[in-house]
Image (tube, rainbow, N blue to C red; front, side):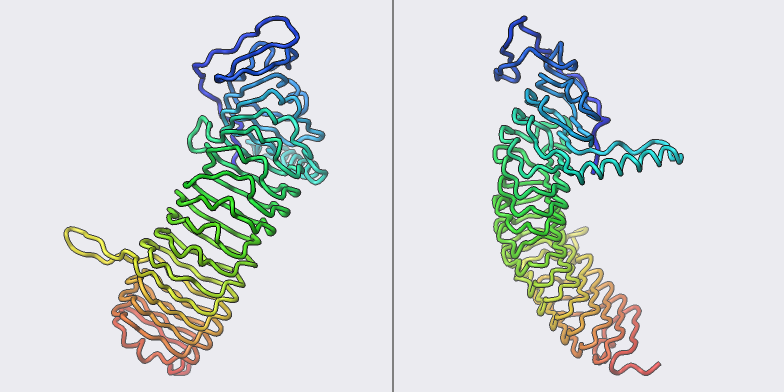
Length: 455
């Protein structure tokens, strides 16, 4: 997790808002809106409602000094300390940088024993504060309307309703951080209710939230940068993501409670990797069938996933991986629209996928490269205990073909295969390699297959 507490803001052209007089209440204007403001203020805002730099809070006295402040033109960071009370922030309406609750003290610059001992002692102290139930209430942030990004770590609060006034998450002074939501280690959080009004979300990172069941409350548009959901084992409702049509980066889903990917029915374009790891309840991914673009598709450790749908519209897929999916029985690679040709100096050149990896799928019985892939740099088929047949189908050229450790494999259909630069067929005791031995290769290796000589 990155810590933005050292960032210093450039000076803004907005002028400071002056005090209006010695009366018990006053009205100030901030960004076109008016708000009642109590004259009692902490030391940081005794002369101005605006703090024109990043703020790091390490104790309650520093929080109390923010009483009456309305705008922070930098990052706002609260480190772990006991009995934290956010109520002095009840006038805070805008944070131009990241709003970060639950930061650890920065790593010491020196590596001497004293510095490291102090650092690890601080880490232990923070862990004890979190274990005791740090920030059971977020009371104090109810006035927040604009922030550049949101990071919450180790908070005991059961909901995010204190953020209901939040309207915009994309006002970060650095565009690369704008719109990030990062929620990690919130033991009691069930959903994201409270964020319904917050627009501008660009990146969603939710990790280690054991009670999280739903993304209800999250507001996304048709496009986003990245989705990273990991170690939220009760999370089964992704409906809040249903408006998505494209991502500029990755979609990573690991250790969730999802049964399907129906929430992604309109997700057509994934610029990066779409990865599904260790989702123990995931039964089908049929909703992905209409996709048109993905850099990579990774299926690993999903024990109830039985098959892969056809992808009739998918035009780009560079990397495919299906590994350790215990319930996967058949694997049909059906991508009829994959674009396989390019022009180089007016000559047609066949494009190749980088890697196709299929291994450790205990129930897998057949592999069929039915449509789409014409060439690949690496095709590896290994350790599939019940695999009986492989049809290489549309593959015409492979840089490397490795078939190893498949004890039930009896048949490999070459399909359209013409050349393999490096061919390795090892430890498939029921497989005759006579046909494979006839493939044109630069180098080949055959060992402990059905018709190989005994060593």
